[in-house]
Amino acid sequence: MKIKNICCIGAGYVGGPTMAVIAKQCPNIKVTVVDINEARIAAWNDDNLDNLPVFEPGLDAIVKEARGRNLFFSTEVDKAIDEAEMIFISVNTPTKTYGKGKGMAADLKYIELCARQIARVSKQDKIIVEKSTLPVRTASAIKDILDNTGNDVAFQILSNPEFLAEGTAVEDLLSPDRVLIGGDTTPEGTKAIEALAAVYAHWVPQERILRTNVWSSELSKLTANAFLAQRVSSINAMSEICEKTGADVNEVSKAIGMDSRIGAKFLKSSVGFGGSCFQKDILNLVYIAKSYGLNEVADYWEQVILMNEHQKQRFSDNIVSTLYNTVSGKKIAFLGWAFKKDTNDTRESAAIKVADNLLNEQAEITVFDPKVVEERIYADLDYLNTRSSEENRSLLKVENNPYETCKSAHAIAVLTEWDEFKTYDWKQIFDNMQKPAFVFDGRGILDKEVLEDIGFVYYKIGTGQ
Ligand SMILES: NC(=O)c1ccc[n+]([C@@H]2O[C@H](COP(=O)([O-])OP(=O)(O)OC[C@H]3O[C@@H](n4cnc5c(N)ncnc54)[C@H](O)[C@@H]3O)[C@@H](O)[C@H]2O)c1
Image 1 (cartoon, rainbow, N blue to C red):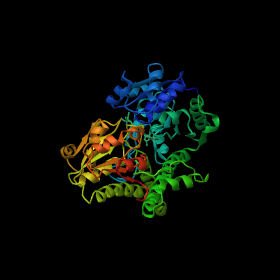
Image 2 (image 1 turned 120 degrees about the vertical axis):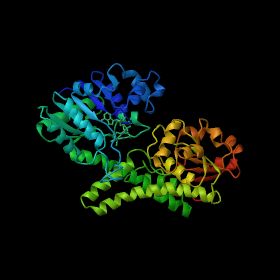
Image 3 (image 1 turned 180 degrees about the horizontal axis):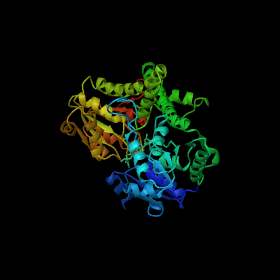
Image 4 (image 1 turned 90 degrees about the vertical axis):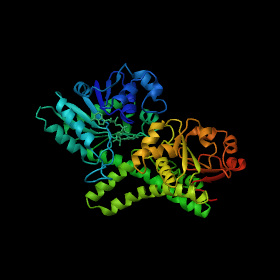
């Protein structure tokens, strides 16, 4: 089957960039990205590309090239489903906040709603592609819903998890390490797999397109995220030992990373991992393991999250104890709120937890992030429900200038590794701060020697004093 019309349900951090790249690379395929969130679709259609709802380096140029040619953003979900031969489901799958599995299992209500909508609207055979990250065996639930519509439409369900990293999404999508497609081993299943493989073959070499059964594909995505997060927690665990022993975690990372069995990537110690996926996917893995009675497996992976929580907690504890055991009424300037550089995504960002801890200690916080808007920052804090939104707004201020942010501060906390932070006039920042002037570098991006020469008391994660 040759695909001419693709529909993607969900115009978020995955659906938007993924479909933009497919549209760019396959000009003969019409790609329609739909969402129930009207404001999000309007932002994707905004003439001013600075207003796209997802910031990713290089994404604006791709949207500019393909939008209106073969890339469309719309709220007409039924119409797009009806027209497409292939439908990607790219909706959110957050951790459940209610009922059985609360705080652990993935909430699949949005997935189920999509499946029911597809079942209701479809009049011709379709290939359904799970792009969202899903618990292993979700495809069978989707299939069940689709196969019981009674309208004689045949569906093939494929799993095609997305491995892009926010901040480098465009690069990752244009030259992926691999594309994974899981499907049924029946002749129809194989045909569906090959139809999707042919879409990717427009730009991805064949040897990088992996075909597996559905369950392996679903589980591989959870496994990949668990392994990546585990590396961060492992090096963060070492960072605490480094601080006690006088070792330097960056030197340790380099030394072990040169071992080809270990590899150099994902060995950067920090205030903790964030993002919408790592924690959610590991919790989901833990839940799956527990539901099969695999308690040792569940405990093993849960520790990755506990270590991450500990890292955030000890970062804020260190600020309090270094500032003479009280930050009450003291101004702490945050550089960065996004969970990593080159994205405006703040989901599960370490900055949120660190801010919450310091606000509990009655600190006054000012925040500057080059890409995160004020409403997002307040929404993140309000979501925690620790204090009223009025209190959050009175204790934490958002600035749009880094120098104003740091003015009169007792300490600066670097929470995101934005490159521009390295280029600031740190002497000017120092001159306008309270003394002693402290910098707590949660990303290890600033130059210790330069800052100490200026006069700062500088704390870098993973480095003993
Ligand atoms: N963000 C990442 O880096 C990343 C990477 C790989 C995989 N994933 C996975 O991809 C999936 C999507 O993640 P995201 O970050 O793009 O989420 P997101 O919240 O940014 O986007 C999801 C979108 O789906 C829309 N939506 C929900 N239900 C809908 C429905 N019934 N009809 C139409 N639209 C609907 C929402 O309005 C929202 O705009 C998740 O399963 C996530 O785990 C995310």
